[in-house]
Image (cartoon, rainbow, N blue to C red; front, side):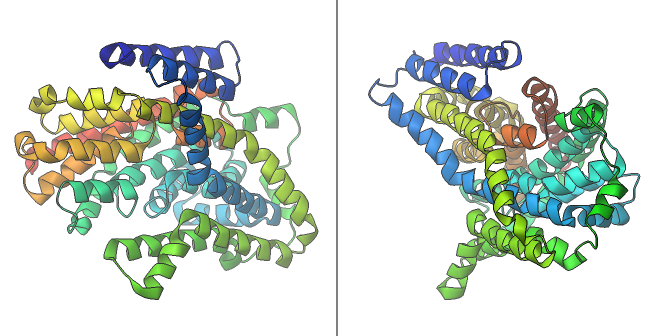
Length: 452
């Protein structure tokens, strides 16, 4: 099965997967793997190659994000154990104000995800989110979505994350990354506002597992939990496990962007990889654990972390299998070869194409790079000639690459799993959030295009 028939089969398969998980209560891992196998067979992938495609998709996910999730979750567990997460929550509340915790969470995510992948950023900041929920009593779902929104917007818009850099290179303005960064910051305004309002609205109607647990048992207040830790870590100690990975990844990205060679450049690139940066953060967390007098809990804390992240890793890897199956089919090629009739849409064309690719195969970075390659020779026809116009075209690609996140996207599973959101609620919250912010971003880009 190829072409339009397979595209229709893909849509039906995604609907079936949602029904299996949300209505029939099939475990997401089994549902995604079953749908992936079905689509692999429908796509006409040779039978002898199907196991290799499934295994490749599974292992690639572990390669790219598995260790990052483990170390990020371990850092979060230590921050909670030592009380550092509560210290950081207090800092954020003092900076932004106690009446605006959701806004604080969104802005924190937006800043962190400029040098850091959104998946990694969510895992790293999740303990701070949980502490702020306890501190303020604000909806856990609203806080989760605000963090997700902030991380996602800067991830697709602002270098040095790989997607925008690759798009700038493909579209011929790789030397104007400062301009791309400035346009990315400007184009973040509408989606950040829309994401904030949507998160506040949805947070009033949905309940996370964290809040359900607090309703079923007597939970100590934030102040009681804080007092139980004794003296909290200092500001520097509390920030170190989070700040060090962020700084290392930022310096690594700068070294890569600038072409910095030699031993120093190679060292910064090595330490700036997410795995090594999060490992360094893990070392700082271990030091914090022993300095707080809780070193005896080191083994049990590590063991519990691995038990906690296991289901998340396997569901995320299953999503990687689905994405690999789609990438191995001719769906992306079919979409690319039938894109010529969409050129009349102007700057809307890269947005629509990127959103189709994003929804189909799950990865925002793949959607950005693939769309950029298709759009590059079409820039004059789309009316995108000057560096500013091309930068807006990159933003349109980024907006499409947010639209939408669902079961074949690892970020969907990171947000819903760590945020304690049920899968069916995840479609109503995280998936709809990405639709809202993607459309809001494209609206702002379209308005800016009228003036530039």
